[in-house]
Length: 468
Ligand code: TNX
Image (cartoon, rainbow, N blue to C red; front, side):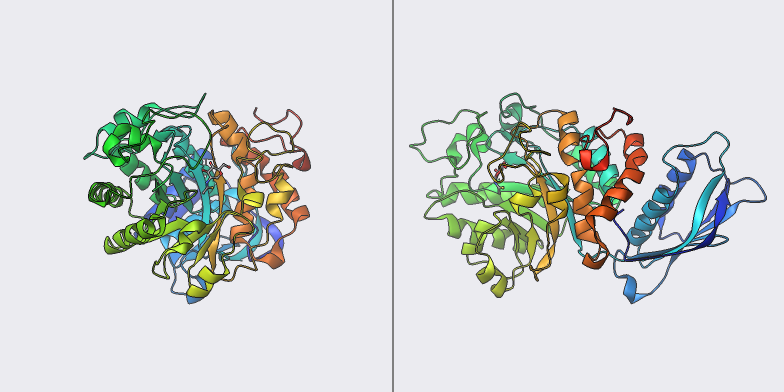
Protein backbone atom coordinates (compact mmCIF):
# COMPACT_ATOMS: atom_id res chain seq x y z
CA UNK A 1 0.00 0.00 0.00
CA UNK A 2 0.07 2.00 -2.21
CA UNK A 3 -0.11 -0.80 -4.75
CA UNK A 4 3.22 -1.16 -6.58
CA UNK A 5 3.69 -0.85 -10.28
CA UNK A 6 4.43 -4.56 -10.55
CA UNK A 7 4.34 -7.48 -8.12
CA UNK A 8 5.30 -11.04 -8.96
CA UNK A 9 4.71 -13.73 -6.38
CA UNK A 10 6.55 -17.03 -6.68
CA UNK A 11 5.68 -20.15 -4.75
CA UNK A 12 7.21 -20.81 -1.39
CA UNK A 13 8.25 -18.62 1.45
CA UNK A 14 11.29 -17.36 3.28
CA UNK A 15 11.39 -17.83 7.02
CA UNK A 16 13.18 -15.20 8.98
CA UNK A 17 14.06 -15.11 12.66
CA UNK A 18 17.46 -13.46 12.40
CA UNK A 19 18.98 -11.20 9.76
CA UNK A 20 22.28 -9.69 8.75
CA UNK A 21 22.11 -6.32 7.04
CA UNK A 22 24.58 -5.35 4.34
CA UNK A 23 24.41 -1.79 3.16
CA UNK A 24 26.48 0.91 1.50
CA UNK A 25 27.42 3.93 3.60
CA UNK A 26 25.34 6.17 1.34
CA UNK A 27 22.12 4.42 2.38
CA UNK A 28 22.18 5.76 5.92
CA UNK A 29 18.49 6.64 6.23
CA UNK A 30 17.24 3.38 4.76
CA UNK A 31 19.74 1.51 6.92
CA UNK A 32 18.46 3.19 10.07
CA UNK A 33 14.85 2.60 9.09
CA UNK A 34 15.57 -1.09 8.47
CA UNK A 35 17.43 -1.48 11.79
CA UNK A 36 14.45 0.06 13.60
CA UNK A 37 12.10 -2.35 11.88
CA UNK A 38 14.22 -5.36 12.78
CA UNK A 39 14.56 -4.23 16.39
CA UNK A 40 10.83 -3.63 16.68
CA UNK A 41 10.13 -7.15 15.40
CA UNK A 42 12.72 -8.70 17.65
CA UNK A 43 14.79 -9.90 14.70
CA UNK A 44 18.38 -10.13 15.89
CA UNK A 45 21.52 -10.89 13.91
CA UNK A 46 22.62 -14.05 15.73
CA UNK A 47 22.20 -17.56 14.42
CA UNK A 48 23.39 -19.68 11.54
CA UNK A 49 20.09 -19.20 9.75
CA UNK A 50 20.39 -15.39 9.70
CA UNK A 51 18.89 -14.15 6.44
CA UNK A 52 21.00 -11.68 4.47
CA UNK A 53 19.22 -8.37 3.80
CA UNK A 54 21.14 -6.56 1.08
CA UNK A 55 20.63 -2.87 0.43
CA UNK A 56 22.16 -1.79 -2.83
CA UNK A 57 22.46 1.47 -4.72
CA UNK A 58 22.20 0.73 -8.43
CA UNK A 59 22.51 2.98 -11.44
CA UNK A 60 19.28 2.02 -13.17
CA UNK A 61 17.60 5.08 -14.74
CA UNK A 62 14.27 3.23 -14.87
CA UNK A 63 14.05 3.57 -11.08
CA UNK A 64 14.13 7.37 -11.12
CA UNK A 65 14.73 9.26 -7.88
CA UNK A 66 12.34 7.27 -5.73
CA UNK A 67 11.77 3.89 -7.37
CA UNK A 68 12.99 0.64 -5.87
CA UNK A 69 13.12 -3.09 -6.38
CA UNK A 70 12.40 -5.58 -3.61
CA UNK A 71 13.15 -9.26 -4.13
CA UNK A 72 12.63 -12.03 -1.60
CA UNK A 73 14.27 -15.34 -2.54
CA UNK A 74 16.74 -17.05 -0.24
CA UNK A 75 17.76 -13.59 0.82
CA UNK A 76 16.11 -10.17 0.81
CA UNK A 77 17.36 -7.70 -1.80
CA UNK A 78 16.47 -4.03 -1.77
CA UNK A 79 17.79 -1.88 -4.57
CA UNK A 80 17.30 1.71 -5.66
CA UNK A 81 19.23 4.61 -7.13
CA UNK A 82 18.90 6.67 -3.97
CA UNK A 83 18.64 6.37 -0.22
CA UNK A 84 15.06 7.62 -0.61
CA UNK A 85 14.21 4.80 -2.98
CA UNK A 86 15.63 2.34 -0.46
CA UNK A 87 13.52 3.94 2.28
CA UNK A 88 10.44 3.14 0.21
CA UNK A 89 11.68 -0.43 -0.21
CA UNK A 90 11.99 -0.77 3.57
CA UNK A 91 8.38 0.42 3.94
CA UNK A 92 7.23 -2.24 1.50
CA UNK A 93 9.17 -4.86 3.44
CA UNK A 94 7.56 -3.57 6.65
CA UNK A 95 4.14 -4.14 5.13
CA UNK A 96 5.02 -7.75 4.25
CA UNK A 97 5.84 -8.42 7.91
CA UNK A 98 3.51 -8.36 10.90
CA UNK A 99 2.91 -5.08 12.68
CA UNK A 100 3.97 -6.37 16.06
CA UNK A 101 6.76 -8.59 17.37
CA UNK A 102 6.33 -12.22 18.28
CA UNK A 103 8.30 -13.31 21.33
CA UNK A 104 9.91 -16.17 19.42
CA UNK A 105 10.20 -14.53 16.04
CA UNK A 106 9.83 -16.68 13.01
CA UNK A 107 8.20 -14.65 10.32
CA UNK A 108 7.21 -15.88 6.88
CA UNK A 109 7.72 -13.78 3.81
CA UNK A 110 6.32 -14.64 0.41
CA UNK A 111 8.88 -15.11 -2.35
CA UNK A 112 8.20 -12.01 -4.29
CA UNK A 113 9.61 -9.49 -6.76
CA UNK A 114 8.35 -5.92 -6.61
CA UNK A 115 9.29 -3.27 -9.15
CA UNK A 116 7.99 0.08 -8.16
CA UNK A 117 8.16 3.74 -9.15
CA UNK A 118 5.80 6.56 -8.18
CA UNK A 119 3.35 8.01 -10.67
CA UNK A 120 3.86 11.49 -9.20
CA UNK A 121 6.79 13.12 -7.50
CA UNK A 122 4.56 15.26 -5.23
CA UNK A 123 2.52 13.18 -2.81
CA UNK A 124 1.36 15.57 -0.20
CA UNK A 125 -0.43 16.02 3.06
CA UNK A 126 -1.14 19.59 4.05
CA UNK A 127 -2.09 20.50 7.59
CA UNK A 128 -3.35 23.84 8.86
CA UNK A 129 -1.53 24.46 12.12
CA UNK A 130 -2.55 28.14 12.04
CA UNK A 131 -6.24 27.80 12.88
CA UNK A 132 -5.46 25.13 15.45
CA UNK A 133 -1.97 24.16 16.53
CA UNK A 134 -0.44 20.69 16.34
CA UNK A 135 2.50 19.77 18.54
CA UNK A 136 5.91 18.81 17.18
CA UNK A 137 5.34 15.34 18.67
CA UNK A 138 2.15 14.97 16.67
CA UNK A 139 3.86 16.14 13.49
CA UNK A 140 6.65 13.58 13.98
CA UNK A 141 4.09 10.83 14.38
CA UNK A 142 2.36 12.12 11.29
CA UNK A 143 5.61 11.96 9.32
CA UNK A 144 6.07 8.31 10.37
CA UNK A 145 2.56 7.53 9.17
CA UNK A 146 3.05 9.41 5.91
CA UNK A 147 6.28 7.49 5.30
CA UNK A 148 4.49 4.15 5.69
CA UNK A 149 2.38 5.16 2.68
CA UNK A 150 5.27 6.73 0.74
CA UNK A 151 3.81 10.23 1.01
CA UNK A 152 6.67 12.68 0.61
CA UNK A 153 5.52 16.30 1.09
CA UNK A 154 4.27 17.71 4.37
CA UNK A 155 2.87 21.18 3.65
CA UNK A 156 2.56 23.25 6.83
CA UNK A 157 0.07 26.11 6.63
CA UNK A 158 1.95 28.12 9.25
CA UNK A 159 0.15 31.44 9.25
CA UNK A 160 -3.40 32.65 8.93
CA UNK A 161 -5.82 35.11 10.49
CA UNK A 162 -6.19 33.06 13.65
CA UNK A 163 -2.53 32.41 14.39
CA UNK A 164 1.13 32.83 13.45
CA UNK A 165 3.05 29.66 14.30
CA UNK A 166 6.65 30.17 13.16
CA UNK A 167 9.20 32.09 15.18
CA UNK A 168 10.72 34.94 13.16
CA UNK A 169 13.65 36.33 15.11
CA UNK A 170 13.45 39.80 13.58
CA UNK A 171 9.79 40.12 14.51
CA UNK A 172 9.35 38.49 17.92
CA UNK A 173 5.81 39.77 18.40
CA UNK A 174 4.61 37.53 15.57
CA UNK A 175 4.68 34.58 17.95
CA UNK A 176 4.28 36.51 21.21
CA UNK A 177 0.98 37.96 20.00
CA UNK A 178 0.17 36.03 16.82
CA UNK A 179 1.14 32.70 18.37
CA UNK A 180 -1.14 33.19 21.35
CA UNK A 181 -4.42 33.10 19.43
CA UNK A 182 -6.32 30.35 17.65
CA UNK A 183 -9.69 29.67 16.14
CA UNK A 184 -12.50 29.40 18.70
CA UNK A 185 -11.99 26.17 20.73
CA UNK A 186 -8.75 25.51 18.85
CA UNK A 187 -5.22 25.33 20.20
CA UNK A 188 -2.72 28.21 20.20
CA UNK A 189 1.06 27.83 20.15
CA UNK A 190 4.08 28.25 17.96
CA UNK A 191 7.26 26.51 16.84
CA UNK A 192 10.72 27.86 17.60
CA UNK A 193 13.21 27.84 14.75
CA UNK A 194 15.24 25.18 16.58
CA UNK A 195 12.15 22.94 16.79
CA UNK A 196 11.42 23.42 13.11
CA UNK A 197 15.00 22.60 12.09
CA UNK A 198 14.81 19.43 14.16
CA UNK A 199 11.50 18.57 12.51
CA UNK A 200 12.97 19.16 9.06
CA UNK A 201 15.81 16.73 9.84
CA UNK A 202 13.38 14.16 11.25
CA UNK A 203 11.31 14.38 8.07
CA UNK A 204 14.33 14.25 5.76
CA UNK A 205 15.53 11.05 7.39
CA UNK A 206 12.16 9.54 6.49
CA UNK A 207 11.98 10.74 2.90
CA UNK A 208 9.61 13.63 3.63
CA UNK A 209 10.18 17.25 2.60
CA UNK A 210 8.50 19.90 4.71
CA UNK A 211 7.02 22.68 2.59
CA UNK A 212 6.32 25.84 4.59
CA UNK A 213 3.49 28.20 3.70
CA UNK A 214 3.39 31.85 4.73
CA UNK A 215 -0.04 32.91 3.48
CA UNK A 216 -0.04 36.46 2.05
CA UNK A 217 -1.23 39.14 1.33
CA UNK A 218 -4.59 38.09 2.82
CA UNK A 219 -5.19 35.73 5.75
CA UNK A 220 -2.84 37.90 7.81
CA UNK A 221 -4.85 39.15 10.80
CA UNK A 222 -2.41 37.50 13.26
CA UNK A 223 0.45 39.43 11.65
CA UNK A 224 -1.51 42.69 11.67
CA UNK A 225 -2.42 42.22 15.32
CA UNK A 226 1.29 41.70 16.09
CA UNK A 227 2.66 44.57 13.97
CA UNK A 228 -0.08 47.13 13.42
CA UNK A 229 2.02 49.09 10.92
CA UNK A 230 1.49 46.30 8.36
CA UNK A 231 -2.15 47.42 8.14
CA UNK A 232 -3.44 50.57 6.50
CA UNK A 233 -4.03 53.48 8.83
CA UNK A 234 -7.79 53.26 8.53
CA UNK A 235 -7.95 49.57 9.46
CA UNK A 236 -10.48 49.39 12.28
CA UNK A 237 -9.90 46.05 13.94
CA UNK A 238 -6.35 45.03 14.77
CA UNK A 239 -7.20 42.53 17.46
CA UNK A 240 -6.38 38.81 17.28
CA UNK A 241 -9.11 36.89 15.50
CA UNK A 242 -10.78 33.62 16.43
CA UNK A 243 -13.67 33.41 13.95
CA UNK A 244 -13.94 31.27 10.82
CA UNK A 245 -14.69 33.87 8.16
CA UNK A 246 -12.08 34.43 5.45
CA UNK A 247 -11.11 37.26 3.12
CA UNK A 248 -11.19 40.28 5.45
CA UNK A 249 -7.55 40.96 6.33
CA UNK A 250 -4.81 42.21 4.03
CA UNK A 251 -1.37 43.80 4.27
CA UNK A 252 -1.45 47.49 3.45
CA UNK A 253 -0.28 47.14 -0.14
CA UNK A 254 -0.38 50.93 -0.48
CA UNK A 255 2.61 51.04 1.89
CA UNK A 256 5.18 49.04 -0.09
CA UNK A 257 8.03 50.58 1.92
CA UNK A 258 6.62 48.86 5.02
CA UNK A 259 5.23 45.63 3.56
CA UNK A 260 8.02 44.44 1.26
CA UNK A 261 10.91 44.70 3.73
CA UNK A 262 8.75 42.72 6.17
CA UNK A 263 7.95 40.08 3.57
CA UNK A 264 11.59 39.80 2.52
CA UNK A 265 12.89 39.53 6.08
CA UNK A 266 10.33 36.88 6.97
CA UNK A 267 11.04 34.85 3.84
CA UNK A 268 14.79 35.03 4.45
CA UNK A 269 14.32 33.37 7.83
CA UNK A 270 11.90 30.85 6.34
CA UNK A 271 14.32 29.70 3.64
CA UNK A 272 17.09 29.43 6.23
CA UNK A 273 14.98 26.92 8.18
CA UNK A 274 13.45 24.89 5.34
CA UNK A 275 15.66 23.43 2.59
CA UNK A 276 12.57 22.70 0.45
CA UNK A 277 13.09 23.77 -3.16
CA UNK A 278 9.53 25.11 -3.10
CA UNK A 279 8.16 27.73 -0.72
CA UNK A 280 4.41 28.36 -0.53
CA UNK A 281 3.42 32.01 -0.33
CA UNK A 282 -0.36 31.57 -0.28
CA UNK A 283 -2.16 34.20 -2.31
CA UNK A 284 -5.68 32.87 -1.72
CA UNK A 285 -9.03 34.48 -1.12
CA UNK A 286 -8.26 38.14 -1.37
CA UNK A 287 -9.54 40.79 -3.73
CA UNK A 288 -7.37 43.89 -3.95
CA UNK A 289 -6.30 46.17 -6.83
CA UNK A 290 -2.63 45.59 -5.96
CA UNK A 291 -2.99 41.82 -5.45
CA UNK A 292 -1.36 40.74 -8.72
CA UNK A 293 1.50 43.16 -8.17
CA UNK A 294 2.11 41.77 -4.68
CA UNK A 295 2.09 38.18 -5.89
CA UNK A 296 4.50 38.94 -8.75
CA UNK A 297 6.93 40.76 -6.49
CA UNK A 298 6.82 38.15 -3.76
CA UNK A 299 7.19 35.22 -6.15
CA UNK A 300 10.19 37.00 -7.71
CA UNK A 301 11.66 37.44 -4.23
CA UNK A 302 11.42 33.71 -3.59
CA UNK A 303 13.02 33.10 -6.97
CA UNK A 304 15.90 35.43 -6.13
CA UNK A 305 16.44 33.40 -2.95
CA UNK A 306 17.03 30.36 -5.12
CA UNK A 307 13.67 28.70 -4.48
CA UNK A 308 10.46 28.30 -6.44
CA UNK A 309 7.19 29.79 -5.23
CA UNK A 310 3.94 27.91 -4.87
CA UNK A 311 0.71 29.89 -5.01
CA UNK A 312 -2.90 28.97 -4.59
CA UNK A 313 -4.66 28.98 -7.99
CA UNK A 314 -5.70 32.66 -7.77
CA UNK A 315 -2.03 33.63 -8.09
CA UNK A 316 -2.27 32.65 -11.77
CA UNK A 317 -3.54 36.16 -12.57
CA UNK A 318 -0.13 37.63 -11.73
CA UNK A 319 2.84 38.10 -13.99
CA UNK A 320 4.95 35.24 -12.65
CA UNK A 321 7.57 32.91 -14.11
CA UNK A 322 6.12 29.76 -15.69
CA UNK A 323 7.97 27.53 -13.23
CA UNK A 324 5.90 28.83 -10.29
CA UNK A 325 3.66 26.03 -9.05
CA UNK A 326 -0.06 26.59 -8.74
CA UNK A 327 -2.15 24.68 -6.25
CA UNK A 328 -5.61 24.02 -7.60
CA UNK A 329 -8.34 23.97 -4.96
CA UNK A 330 -11.69 24.91 -6.53
CA UNK A 331 -12.73 22.01 -8.75
CA UNK A 332 -14.01 24.24 -11.52
CA UNK A 333 -11.33 26.94 -11.45
CA UNK A 334 -10.35 28.04 -14.96
CA UNK A 335 -6.73 26.97 -14.83
CA UNK A 336 -6.23 26.20 -18.53
CA UNK A 337 -4.59 29.51 -19.43
CA UNK A 338 -2.06 29.10 -16.62
CA UNK A 339 -1.35 25.53 -17.72
CA UNK A 340 -0.80 26.79 -21.25
CA UNK A 341 1.79 29.20 -19.86
CA UNK A 342 3.59 26.19 -18.43
CA UNK A 343 2.75 26.29 -14.74
CA UNK A 344 3.01 22.92 -13.02
CA UNK A 345 0.01 22.05 -10.85
CA UNK A 346 -0.44 20.56 -7.42
CA UNK A 347 -3.92 19.07 -7.38
CA UNK A 348 -6.08 19.66 -4.32
CA UNK A 349 -9.62 19.96 -5.72
CA UNK A 350 -11.79 20.56 -2.68
CA UNK A 351 -14.59 18.18 -3.56
CA UNK A 352 -12.14 15.26 -3.46
CA UNK A 353 -9.19 16.32 -1.35
CA UNK A 354 -10.35 18.83 1.29
CA UNK A 355 -10.38 16.36 4.10
CA UNK A 356 -11.49 18.92 6.65
CA UNK A 357 -14.83 17.85 5.18
CA UNK A 358 -16.61 14.94 6.80
CA UNK A 359 -15.83 11.27 6.40
CA UNK A 360 -19.59 10.99 5.92
CA UNK A 361 -22.49 13.31 5.29
CA UNK A 362 -23.41 15.11 8.48
CA UNK A 363 -20.10 14.71 10.30
CA UNK A 364 -19.76 18.07 12.07
CA UNK A 365 -17.31 20.46 10.43
CA UNK A 366 -16.67 21.96 7.01
CA UNK A 367 -19.10 21.16 4.22
CA UNK A 368 -18.97 24.25 2.00
CA UNK A 369 -17.38 22.46 -0.95
CA UNK A 370 -19.38 19.24 -0.82
CA UNK A 371 -22.43 18.87 1.38
CA UNK A 372 -22.21 15.06 1.20
CA UNK A 373 -18.76 15.15 2.78
CA UNK A 374 -15.79 13.27 1.35
CA UNK A 375 -16.18 9.56 2.14
CA UNK A 376 -13.19 7.33 1.48
CA UNK A 377 -14.62 6.10 -1.81
CA UNK A 378 -15.08 9.65 -3.05
CA UNK A 379 -11.46 10.53 -2.30
CA UNK A 380 -10.26 7.36 -4.01
CA UNK A 381 -12.35 8.25 -7.05
CA UNK A 382 -10.39 11.37 -7.96
CA UNK A 383 -8.84 11.07 -11.40
CA UNK A 384 -5.71 13.17 -11.81
CA UNK A 385 -5.12 12.01 -15.40
CA UNK A 386 -6.74 14.99 -17.19
CA UNK A 387 -4.23 17.36 -15.55
CA UNK A 388 -1.25 16.78 -17.78
CA UNK A 389 0.99 19.32 -16.06
CA UNK A 390 0.34 18.02 -12.55
CA UNK A 391 3.40 17.24 -10.46
CA UNK A 392 1.20 15.52 -7.95
CA UNK A 393 -1.66 15.67 -5.53
CA UNK A 394 -2.12 16.88 -2.01
CA UNK A 395 -4.93 16.47 0.51
CA UNK A 396 -5.62 19.50 2.70
CA UNK A 397 -6.69 19.35 6.31
CA UNK A 398 -7.97 22.75 7.41
CA UNK A 399 -8.59 23.04 11.10
CA UNK A 400 -11.34 25.56 11.74
CA UNK A 401 -13.33 22.64 13.16
CA UNK A 402 -10.63 20.07 13.88
CA UNK A 403 -9.06 20.83 17.24
CA UNK A 404 -7.66 17.70 18.88
CA UNK A 405 -5.14 15.04 17.93
CA UNK A 406 -7.92 12.45 17.86
CA UNK A 407 -10.05 14.56 15.51
CA UNK A 408 -6.98 15.14 13.33
CA UNK A 409 -6.35 11.38 13.09
CA UNK A 410 -10.02 10.80 12.33
CA UNK A 411 -9.93 13.24 9.40
CA UNK A 412 -6.58 12.09 8.01
CA UNK A 413 -7.02 8.33 8.18
CA UNK A 414 -7.85 6.24 6.28
CA UNK A 415 -8.40 8.91 3.63
CA UNK A 416 -4.72 9.79 3.29
CA UNK A 417 -4.06 6.20 2.30
CA UNK A 418 -6.38 6.72 -0.67
CA UNK A 419 -4.48 9.89 -1.53
CA UNK A 420 -1.20 8.00 -1.34
CA UNK A 421 -2.45 5.41 -3.79
CA UNK A 422 -3.74 8.06 -6.23
CA UNK A 423 -0.35 9.76 -6.11
CA UNK A 424 1.91 6.72 -6.24
CA UNK A 425 0.17 3.94 -8.14
CA UNK A 426 -0.43 3.73 -11.87
CA UNK A 427 -4.08 4.11 -12.86
CA UNK A 428 -4.12 0.61 -14.36
CA UNK A 429 -3.31 -0.96 -10.99
CA UNK A 430 -5.90 0.92 -8.99
CA UNK A 431 -9.35 -0.31 -8.02
CA UNK A 432 -11.42 0.59 -5.00
CA UNK A 433 -12.20 -3.06 -4.29
CA UNK A 434 -8.52 -3.94 -4.23
CA UNK A 435 -7.73 -0.89 -2.14
CA UNK A 436 -10.36 -1.88 0.40
CA UNK A 437 -8.98 -5.39 0.66
CA UNK A 438 -5.41 -4.22 1.15
CA UNK A 439 -6.40 -1.54 3.68
CA UNK A 440 -8.23 -4.13 5.75
CA UNK A 441 -5.05 -6.17 5.88
CA UNK A 442 -3.07 -3.12 6.90
CA UNK A 443 -5.23 -2.19 9.87
CA UNK A 444 -2.83 -3.74 12.42
CA UNK A 445 -0.05 -1.47 11.11
CA UNK A 446 -2.20 1.59 11.77
CA UNK A 447 -3.13 0.22 15.19
CA UNK A 448 0.53 -0.37 16.01
CA UNK A 449 1.21 3.27 15.13
CA UNK A 450 -1.58 4.36 17.45
CA UNK A 451 -3.66 5.95 14.68
CA UNK A 452 -7.16 6.84 15.85
CA UNK A 453 -8.59 6.48 12.37
CA UNK A 454 -12.17 7.03 11.35
CA UNK A 455 -14.09 3.73 11.79
CA UNK A 456 -14.75 3.54 8.07
CA UNK A 457 -17.62 1.17 7.29
CA UNK A 458 -16.34 0.38 3.79
CA UNK A 459 -13.29 -1.16 5.45
CA UNK A 460 -15.26 -3.02 8.09
CA UNK A 461 -13.63 -0.79 10.68
CA UNK A 462 -16.90 0.25 12.28
CA UNK A 463 -16.41 -2.46 14.91
CA UNK A 464 -14.35 -2.05 18.06
CA UNK A 465 -11.58 -4.54 17.35
CA UNK A 466 -8.97 -1.89 16.59
CA UNK A 467 -6.80 -0.29 19.21
CA UNK A 468 -9.24 2.52 19.91
C1 TNX B 1 -10.64 27.57 1.82
S1 TNX B 1 -8.20 26.59 0.46
C2 TNX B 1 -9.43 28.12 2.25
C3 TNX B 1 -9.03 27.97 3.65
C4 TNX B 1 -10.11 27.37 4.49
C5 TNX B 1 -10.77 26.21 3.77
C6 TNX B 1 -11.81 25.52 4.58
C7 TNX B 1 -7.82 27.93 0.54
C8 TNX B 1 -6.76 28.27 -0.34
N1 TNX B 1 -8.50 28.69 1.40
O1 TNX B 1 -8.62 29.21 4.17
O2 TNX B 1 -9.52 26.92 5.68
O3 TNX B 1 -11.34 26.69 2.58
O4 TNX B 1 -12.28 24.36 3.95
